[in-house]
Image 1 (cartoon, rainbow, N blue to C red):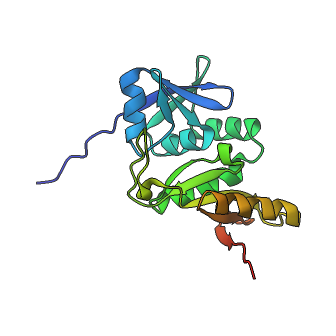
Image 2 (cartoon, rainbow, N blue to C red):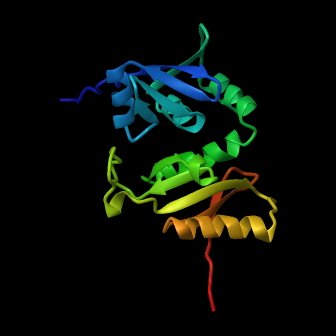
Length: 186
Protein backbone atom coordinates (compact mmCIF):
# COMPACT_ATOMS: atom_id res chain seq x y z
CA UNK A 1 0.00 0.00 0.00
CA UNK A 2 1.58 3.26 -1.15
CA UNK A 3 1.70 6.15 1.26
CA UNK A 4 0.02 9.27 0.00
CA UNK A 5 1.99 12.45 0.39
CA UNK A 6 0.26 15.08 2.48
CA UNK A 7 0.12 18.46 0.74
CA UNK A 8 2.08 21.10 2.63
CA UNK A 9 0.35 24.29 3.61
CA UNK A 10 1.42 27.26 1.53
CA UNK A 11 1.29 30.70 3.12
CA UNK A 12 0.97 34.06 1.42
CA UNK A 13 3.29 36.97 2.04
CA UNK A 14 3.36 40.53 0.78
CA UNK A 15 6.58 42.19 -0.35
CA UNK A 16 6.88 45.48 1.50
CA UNK A 17 10.16 47.30 1.02
CA UNK A 18 12.90 44.77 1.70
CA UNK A 19 10.73 42.47 3.83
CA UNK A 20 7.99 39.96 3.17
CA UNK A 21 5.09 40.14 5.62
CA UNK A 22 2.85 37.20 6.47
CA UNK A 23 -0.31 38.59 8.10
CA UNK A 24 -2.47 36.94 10.74
CA UNK A 25 -1.58 35.76 14.25
CA UNK A 26 -1.95 32.03 13.50
CA UNK A 27 -0.25 32.21 10.08
CA UNK A 28 2.64 34.25 11.49
CA UNK A 29 3.30 31.65 14.20
CA UNK A 30 2.92 28.73 11.78
CA UNK A 31 5.52 30.22 9.41
CA UNK A 32 7.88 30.80 12.34
CA UNK A 33 7.35 27.21 13.49
CA UNK A 34 8.45 25.80 10.11
CA UNK A 35 12.03 26.40 11.25
CA UNK A 36 12.42 29.71 13.07
CA UNK A 37 11.73 31.81 9.97
CA UNK A 38 11.16 35.53 10.41
CA UNK A 39 10.16 37.59 13.40
CA UNK A 40 6.62 36.92 14.55
CA UNK A 41 4.96 39.62 16.63
CA UNK A 42 1.86 41.77 16.62
CA UNK A 43 -0.15 39.50 14.32
CA UNK A 44 2.44 39.37 11.57
CA UNK A 45 5.68 37.61 10.66
CA UNK A 46 8.36 39.76 9.05
CA UNK A 47 10.65 37.72 6.82
CA UNK A 48 13.99 38.82 5.38
CA UNK A 49 14.31 38.39 1.61
CA UNK A 50 16.57 35.33 2.01
CA UNK A 51 14.12 33.67 4.40
CA UNK A 52 11.21 34.31 2.06
CA UNK A 53 13.17 33.00 -0.94
CA UNK A 54 13.98 29.79 0.92
CA UNK A 55 10.32 29.27 1.79
CA UNK A 56 9.32 30.04 -1.82
CA UNK A 57 11.77 27.39 -3.06
CA UNK A 58 10.34 24.91 -0.55
CA UNK A 59 6.82 25.72 -1.86
CA UNK A 60 5.77 26.96 1.58
CA UNK A 61 5.31 30.61 0.62
CA UNK A 62 3.73 32.55 -2.22
CA UNK A 63 4.85 36.18 -2.47
CA UNK A 64 2.75 39.02 -3.80
CA UNK A 65 3.93 42.50 -4.71
CA UNK A 66 0.80 44.59 -4.78
CA UNK A 67 -1.71 42.42 -6.63
CA UNK A 68 0.95 40.56 -8.63
CA UNK A 69 1.92 37.06 -7.56
CA UNK A 70 5.64 36.46 -8.08
CA UNK A 71 6.92 33.03 -9.10
CA UNK A 72 10.29 31.79 -7.84
CA UNK A 73 12.33 33.38 -10.65
CA UNK A 74 10.44 36.69 -10.48
CA UNK A 75 10.86 36.91 -6.72
CA UNK A 76 14.59 36.11 -6.97
CA UNK A 77 15.01 38.83 -9.61
CA UNK A 78 13.03 41.35 -7.55
CA UNK A 79 15.00 40.52 -4.38
CA UNK A 80 18.25 40.97 -6.34
CA UNK A 81 17.08 44.44 -7.41
CA UNK A 82 16.27 45.38 -3.82
CA UNK A 83 19.51 44.01 -2.35
CA UNK A 84 22.63 44.00 -4.53
CA UNK A 85 24.19 41.33 -2.27
CA UNK A 86 21.09 39.10 -2.37
CA UNK A 87 22.46 36.39 -4.69
CA UNK A 88 25.55 35.66 -2.59
CA UNK A 89 23.67 36.03 0.69
CA UNK A 90 21.00 33.62 -0.48
CA UNK A 91 23.58 31.01 -1.57
CA UNK A 92 25.07 31.10 1.93
CA UNK A 93 21.69 31.14 3.70
CA UNK A 94 20.48 28.15 1.68
CA UNK A 95 23.72 26.23 2.20
CA UNK A 96 23.59 26.70 5.98
CA UNK A 97 19.87 25.80 6.13
CA UNK A 98 20.44 22.66 4.06
CA UNK A 99 23.16 21.68 6.53
CA UNK A 100 20.51 21.81 9.27
CA UNK A 101 21.47 25.05 11.00
CA UNK A 102 19.05 27.72 12.21
CA UNK A 103 19.98 30.92 10.38
CA UNK A 104 18.78 34.36 11.39
CA UNK A 105 19.65 37.78 10.04
CA UNK A 106 22.72 39.35 11.60
CA UNK A 107 21.83 42.98 11.00
CA UNK A 108 22.01 43.92 14.68
CA UNK A 109 25.59 42.59 14.72
CA UNK A 110 26.62 44.36 11.52
CA UNK A 111 26.92 41.14 9.56
CA UNK A 112 24.69 39.08 7.30
CA UNK A 113 23.76 36.13 9.51
CA UNK A 114 23.86 34.71 12.99
CA UNK A 115 23.80 30.94 13.06
CA UNK A 116 22.64 28.57 15.77
CA UNK A 117 23.46 24.90 16.16
CA UNK A 118 21.35 22.15 14.63
CA UNK A 119 18.16 21.35 16.50
CA UNK A 120 17.90 24.67 18.33
CA UNK A 121 14.36 26.01 18.67
CA UNK A 122 14.62 29.71 19.45
CA UNK A 123 12.05 31.03 21.86
CA UNK A 124 11.18 34.40 23.30
CA UNK A 125 12.69 35.38 26.64
CA UNK A 126 15.92 34.26 28.32
CA UNK A 127 18.11 31.98 26.22
CA UNK A 128 19.68 28.71 27.27
CA UNK A 129 23.36 28.12 26.52
CA UNK A 130 22.37 25.99 23.52
CA UNK A 131 20.35 28.89 22.08
CA UNK A 132 23.39 31.15 21.97
CA UNK A 133 24.71 32.31 18.59
CA UNK A 134 27.40 29.85 17.47
CA UNK A 135 28.69 31.78 14.45
CA UNK A 136 28.25 35.13 12.82
CA UNK A 137 28.62 34.81 9.07
CA UNK A 138 29.36 37.38 6.43
CA UNK A 139 28.78 36.39 2.78
CA UNK A 140 31.22 37.79 0.23
CA UNK A 141 31.94 37.11 -3.44
CA UNK A 142 35.13 35.48 -4.65
CA UNK A 143 37.78 38.17 -5.04
CA UNK A 144 36.39 40.27 -2.16
CA UNK A 145 38.92 42.51 -0.45
CA UNK A 146 38.72 44.39 2.82
CA UNK A 147 41.01 46.32 5.11
CA UNK A 148 42.66 44.81 8.16
CA UNK A 149 40.59 47.20 10.27
CA UNK A 150 37.34 45.80 8.83
CA UNK A 151 38.54 42.24 9.39
CA UNK A 152 39.58 43.08 12.93
CA UNK A 153 36.21 44.72 13.74
CA UNK A 154 34.36 41.61 12.55
CA UNK A 155 36.52 39.26 14.60
CA UNK A 156 36.30 41.44 17.72
CA UNK A 157 32.52 41.62 17.41
CA UNK A 158 32.30 37.84 17.23
CA UNK A 159 34.64 37.51 20.19
CA UNK A 160 32.57 39.98 22.24
CA UNK A 161 29.39 37.93 21.79
CA UNK A 162 31.21 34.60 22.35
CA UNK A 163 30.67 33.49 18.75
CA UNK A 164 32.99 32.51 15.93
CA UNK A 165 33.40 34.74 12.88
CA UNK A 166 33.01 32.99 9.54
CA UNK A 167 33.57 34.55 6.14
CA UNK A 168 31.47 32.69 3.55
CA UNK A 169 33.08 33.08 0.14
CA UNK A 170 30.78 32.39 -2.81
CA UNK A 171 32.85 31.49 -5.86
CA UNK A 172 31.97 32.06 -9.50
CA UNK A 173 30.40 28.57 -9.72
CA UNK A 174 28.11 29.32 -6.76
CA UNK A 175 29.94 27.08 -4.29
CA UNK A 176 30.41 28.32 -0.72
CA UNK A 177 33.64 27.99 1.25
CA UNK A 178 33.76 29.05 4.89
CA UNK A 179 36.81 30.68 6.44
CA UNK A 180 37.14 30.88 10.21
CA UNK A 181 39.00 33.99 11.27
CA UNK A 182 40.10 34.24 14.88
CA UNK A 183 41.97 36.62 17.11
CA UNK A 184 45.19 35.38 18.67
CA UNK A 185 46.76 37.16 21.60
CA UNK A 186 50.44 36.37 22.26
